[in-house]
Length: 500
View (spheres, rainbow, N blue to C red):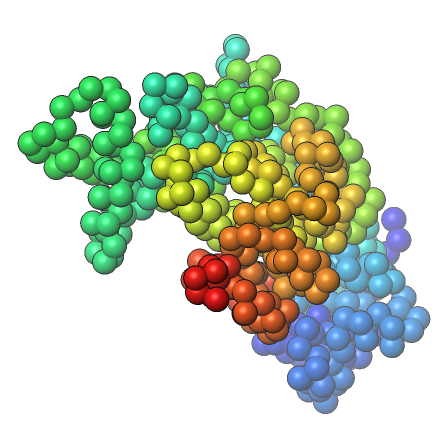
């Protein structure tokens, strides 16, 4: 284990903010040289306390003899420290003081305890440790089953990603049968509405639940819906909502002790095989991403696919990869990603928009009739999700392709599952503005009905505006923040022949 002493190094502080200033004062007081700052805003802040401010690329290329320097990571988000330390290590810096994720997660290790001790002395008491500090070593990828809650003789209770859950199969009532809770399960909308009854569209959501979901099922089952049937139904659902809300507040493990049972679907995902649709819908409506369920041990083991988990773990350990989208698998719940809310903030609103269009055209959720093109650098996440729903999917991945292929294996999708034909026609294309203009142009030209453009506030939509003669703006379906930037999702609809 290599070590160094801070008093023997020139100091670079990552983060030219208030914390960086206090840390700088501590080093100056100890008569240790501050060589400068490193900050993402270096283009705007060229000097801080009469010291230069470098961008990351400048810190990599301009500063030579990096062993003479120590980097102090001062930003407040300690959960980002380890990935930043890896970035600096890849640049050639080995003397790095930061808050290791290993320590944050309660594990031990001589190297990381040494680095953490120095970090706490500098940022906690603003004193410079005189002891030797361990040089940076790559932290092991933190892989274990974070979903497992309880083991029984034949079953386990685990927390599964909400987007992988489907309602029970019910051949008698197709509108209730095997629906994905994220894309097209209207009970989730109802419980969200109960929690926001002051909103203008509250009654519209209630009517939609009755007309689209409750009434068709009641007719199939021969239920008399005359009189006060609607009012009694909604009153019953609302009382269920408030009962569950009480249990969520007063007895959090109620939903684990009373979780529903699921099993693997044939074409991926999990299907409820016992009552529990209201509990699942309620938790999703409340914003829970991971839902407690009970599942047979054998089915759960098949889902875990541990041989591929080990391959992915080894790949992540040996490659410095910036992962964009969350990996919906219990062994990777804690992996750092750029957009942890991707499933909720982006994938879900797009899925719901498309499900509504499909239903309006067919009075059924017959996703298998439609093909989509997905051109996003999300390690294949959205393409796999829509494939799981039954859509045909053509996918373009320009970043992290090896990881994308490994994740396809993990989730039991063959590479041939994602069509690559040049002659495909698409109902909808979902395209990021970071994709190549040729790819954008080609996909839009092959799109028959809609395309969804994901735009960042730092990128103008000129890649899409040239299509204004054949597509018109339909609506904005989401607005969120990834990596500190505003991201917008806009739907464009092809102009009909009558409108041209």
